[in-house]
Length: 144
Image (cartoon, rainbow, N blue to C red; front, side):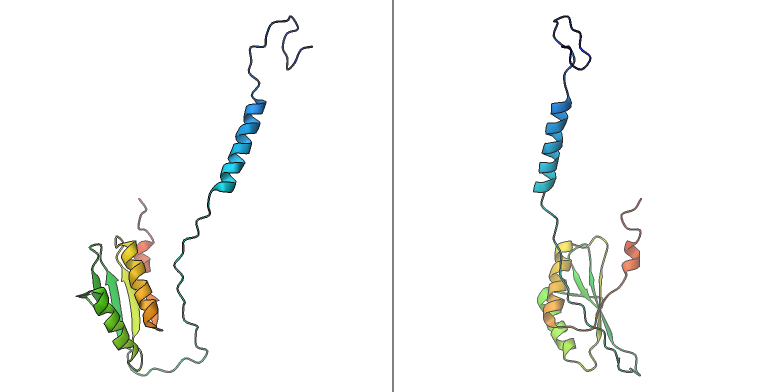
């Protein structure tokens, strides 16, 4: 009997049957997809809960700005600080009434590791008025 269009003259078939190879490749692909770990890295930041009755502020509030440079420099209102000095400044401003707003603005090529360290320091200090600023400059960053 002839199989898949082969001749019935007793000669061997010259075409390779690729169906089993395709089946094996599909099984291997599914196994690969099941064994690849899911990317779950995240930095959890507890954002403050909005106050339904915000207090009326009659004076201009004080704003402190933390900036990070590509050279791994931490700037507090434009002045270079170490991580220990930053923690001290955060604790000092936390005690002020009303608490000053803290703005965080890393430059586009700033170290991700330094950003994570500074964000953890801010989180551990207990600062409640915190915000990211300058995000609009990242809208086109990395695009050609």
